[in-house]
Image 1 (cartoon, helix red, strand yellow):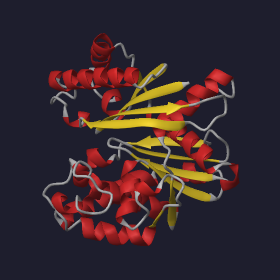
Image 2 (image 1 turned 60 degrees about the vertical axis):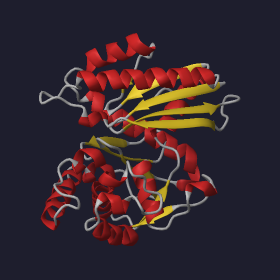
Image 3 (image 1 turned 180 degrees about the vertical axis):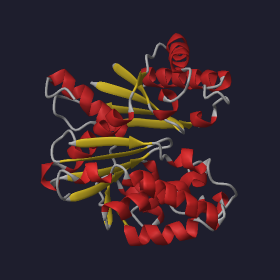
Length: 313
């Protein structure tokens, strides 16, 4: 079976196509493509997605459908996260997308986003990894989850996405005062949920997912993507803290020259680094194991589980 997932995030629309040959099989990637849309920046003063933003989204989703059909996808799913779920005109945008493309986007709430991403990390690292603590930094939100099973004991979402916070920083690069204020606010917000995530017991492994964390790890010396998904990649707190200091003094153009950092990702890399550093500090994490699977893979796993009756999250 060839499955496709369209993931509408705050920054990008991503199409992932995988093959799952039989129940319980490892989903094998066939095709992946992303379009930078920056939907979170397409908002009116009232908090609605603008007509231009909705039109662009509809065209991109329609293009994803066409590509999926060309790749032989038999089942295509569409999901949207913080940018659409927080808009004032969510239903209107969803209706326009469905009319243009035929795709009925499912809007995930933040906690569900964290749970599905946790499922992907658990399947990747397996039961032998023990109790997991998950961190995932998207464009609009930070997802945190912890647990011993395939579904976490605790899953939370905070409005601390890299794109969202970047819009709060002035200047390129921003001044030290702005970075200091951002760090203070981020830590205060993460601290409000820290006791809940620590309640279940000591973690055995801290895991980081998302493009932001992968980019930070690569900038700190982790193996490049070309070496494949099975190479062990980590992001240490010491390396990240040193990188944050460097990023704070670098304009976006210079950040884009770092290993693993694209021009589109470079402007928000500093804010993302501040969030990850704060979370690692507050949870006492010295090193994050970087997971190549995240939300999209988790959605595919959840779909396959539902087909086989394995479990219903």
